[in-house]
Image 1: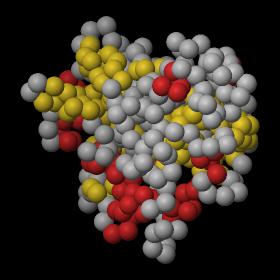
Image 2: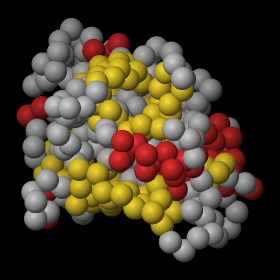
Image 3: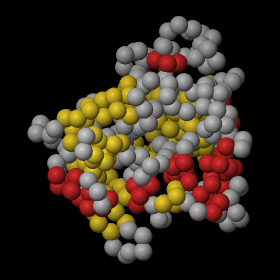
Length: 332
């Protein structure tokens, strides 16, 4: 098997950026989900996610990395494409904004809290003009959110590959108080999916239609698996020189039904992908109503800062005898 595609998502829930190579860190790919858009209400800010705000899929992102930027700062280039119009609006956002004068707010995702910085009005006004209502852009900065999977925070689950060797200690090389931090990513630093399983999803659509892999929001797309859904049992994979522990399934919501061309819920068969997967992919006992596609991963700390690239070999280095069970309280 090999890495077919790599994605990073500089602003949560906007379209992702394809990359050919990157380093890996304990918090995910560099610049992945370090920004987030919030809707302004009189008494609160509301997290904006594709499932509730499908128009977010009309915003495309690209990254000018610091090493390719004359200023050495780097930028996120966001383009807003309105259906039926030829031109798009764009704005450039610094990858690492200066935060000393920015207001700090609290942001909670899936009961996992953190602090973030409110970007200044030029960015907030631009996004508000695109959405047609008041929003703000929040920057995570040096802050992170705690991971709330009990089986991860307390060590491997009883069915995992590691539990037969170390039943009561955390994964080797990862301090317990350090391994539980994530960005604005939903539940884990990495999401790995298999192209072979994607082909199974596409086979459920009318002839000639293909499921768009980007709707599943992966970081890593693997090609060459012998059979669909075998990744359900992958416990650990080596991606080039880096190893990732796959500790949870990714359970799915209605966001995979969105039509990315219109920014609206999909119509026809493509708008019913979630229902199609519910027929036989509700395979996680901890989230019995949600179909599974992909695996959430956490980097082995000894591989921090190693580089991976499209085309790198992928090897399953550990398999689970049973599927893992979703246990993020309140989700699933």
